[in-house]
Amino acid sequence: MENLDWGALGFDYRKTDFNARFYYRDGKWSDMEICDSEYINMHMSAACLHYGLELFEGLKAFRGKDGKVRLFRVKDNALRMQSSARRLCLPVPTVDMFVDACCEVVRRNERFIPPYGTGASLYLRPLLIGTNAVLGVKAATEAMLVIFASPVGAYFKEGLKPISVIIDREQDRAAPRGTGDVKVGGNYASSILSGSHAHERGYSNVLYLDTVERKFIEECGAANFFGIRDGKYITPKSGSILPSITNKSLRVLAADLGLEVEERPVSIEELSTFSECGACGTAAVISPIGKIVDMQTDDVYDYGTEVGEYSQKMFNTLQDIQYGRAEDKYGWCTVVE
Ligand code: PLP
Ligand code: COI
Image (cartoon, rainbow, N blue to C red; front, side):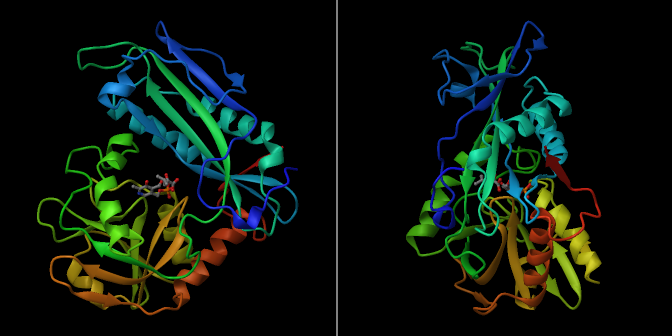
């Protein structure tokens, strides 16, 4: 095993040994190639560089208490990559290609899978890009799927400590009927400015509103939002939110805890009624939100400095499943042999 300070890892790129690649040419996908280079040799006029024909995924492998390595909900990520690829008219990889390559990348980078008990995991980043040379704006005819890995720690340096977020009134993340519900690079490009402004003002993240009425909560940076109130787990529903696999899992765990699950438009007026709220995603896991400030009205919603009861319980159960401490009764984990 690599000799790293596993407990000190942040969410940063770190070189590992191998990545997996597939190439789409002449109407078909190649077999998987295993590569030890971190670089891609690409035409300067490649469609991904000019017109953003690029999409990605993010998922984690965990070394369990029993020493087994588990990939969390890899098939769901494969299906979401397919939906992103259809939206950008990129060649659609099969679920098997995606799942097999993720398992192979985990196996080949075994020495970078953080030891059990460090709180760290191996993050996988599948990336699909249009590679043929273009000048006109049109669908890509050639593409490359790369899957690489990087050991990571917490996304927010606060860990499971509540974060402060700001409701952005300056920029929008995604438009209705745009690409907000798929995982394409363009969504993240348009979030950089608001993210930087939030950081400059001392906030960890941005809470985005819907772009029609600016009344409903959409997402919390690169994570979904949830609130807890009166025995309910409430999470926004909108056509421009990325369907988070973590959120989908928390909805199940919340119901197991006896909470009623509501997935519906959530107005900012409801913020004052939540007893706890949080951001959830693969990188963020659950990041409890301690404070939300509205940039326009200066309204402050304060949820305190402690982790809420339900956020803590859901976090524990989710991690218990991921680290093999609890029964995986929904079959979410793929054990990589
Ligand atoms: N929303 C956005 C915009 C994201 O980038 C992510 C991260 O993947 C999520 C939500 C959370 O999704 P998941 O739980 O599938 O990682
Ligand atoms: C993830 O949670 O996997 C993400 O993709 C977030 C990332 C954009 C930092």
